[in-house]
Length: 457
Image (cartoon, rainbow, N blue to C red; front, side, top):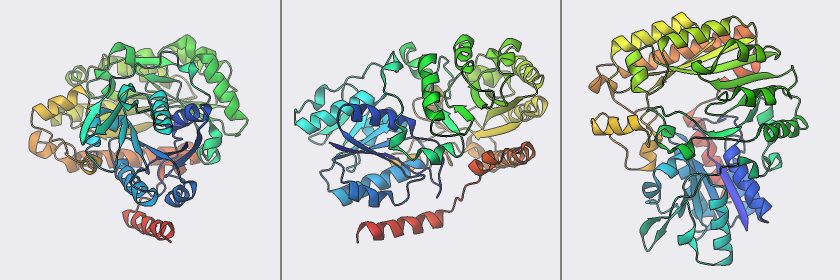
């Protein structure tokens, strides 16, 4: 079959330059099985609907994440039915559809939902449709409609050995566009912790954390080095530094020319680990600080303390090549204005190189989401379009918590300006290019109209 996989636009004209790694693995597995695969990233592949029309796929897969990108996913799904015909199967996967498969399938422009890890569920669906076997009801990890009713099959067990997956197929995407900014890799899936604001906190232990072997990761890097001279490497794992020996095996095979960005926790940083990083050009360590309130840290189930946060940032300041990022959450359920002030004061004290102030968003599937709904602090949208707006208008904190939403947004904006100033001072112009986005809703609408004119010529 001819398979088209689509990464929706992330609400900006240019979008983000992070490769669609999830779709790349889905595509690699399908191609290995003999199917023809094309991947379109609407963040960089302009006139993608025109390309869809020319490719004439037999099936279209679209990934989804709660937030603005859902609007483009809906747009692509509807246009697929118009351009290719109503009988062309449209399959949604990704976090949002996996958490809300029933709600997602209420829309007539979506035919199937892949729940959870999608590589082999999607492949089985493609082959069942291709040979007309009618075995849709036996495919684990699949949700679908039958006689107007939504049916959700048994879940698919997660892959315990990630090394069975094919290598990333960089030939299926415009690799140069991504490598122009930085190299992005994912060495693991899941997270070993259970923060209450995060979906991972609700999954069983078997879902939490699995990694590719260090040898596999090193081989992926070597393959990329043949394609680019860029040496800015970002491990986009939920949590990269859980095993220092694992990290060491990877670092030993990297040139000192590399700049690294790693996501970690304050309790997994010590002098020995930081010394391991001392040979690299520059290293960014990104921490989820979350709050300056001990009560809120307990509520988030972070399993860290304020003192541990202070100690970790103090250790990082000893290393000349270490830069730090700290993210915090503002406006979560029950948080007070005094606790927000405690968070802002802690950020001043630890003085990270980069700040990220995140206004709390009630993502479905998390423990804190359930609390927000049950406490009448948040009313879940009933449509996909409604969910697209959640990241901007989640909880009305001015009504429920006595905290003005505008106040929270202003903190977020000030943090962005601080980061911009630091980027300029550090001379990291590639990061500046990554941050500056030509976001203009009017231009996006004009662009979509031009594309439609071309498609229907």
